[in-house]
Image 1 (spheres, rainbow, N blue to C red):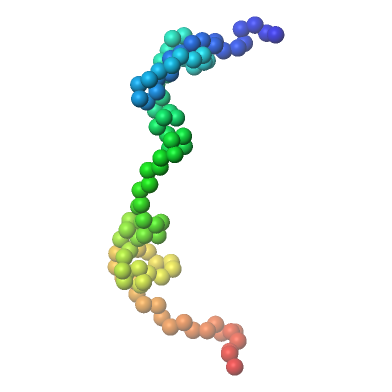
Image 2 (spheres, rainbow, N blue to C red; image 1 turned 180 degrees about the horizontal axis):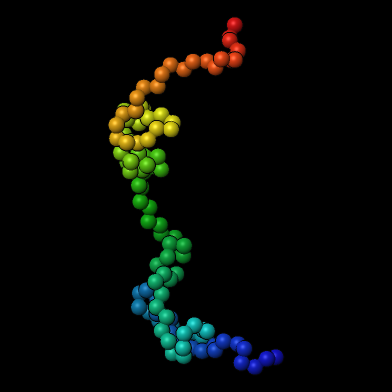
Length: 104
């Protein structure tokens, strides 16, 4: 086995979000270093089972709110038109293509 190829394995202090701490061995930092956690099993929803649910509305409603498309302006918008704040012009009557088959 080769010598001096492995990282230094030493004791560090891990400080949880609530201020409690414990000692463990790690390759992180230097001997006696203190590792402060931002998220730990005492506060993270994956371990606590407590979820913060904020109802922000659906995706479509958030899009409409963000770009100011509400009410009749949304109905007047057609595919391929830009949301410029002004109402879109009414589309002309659809005409069948020249070679389209007619209904009997």
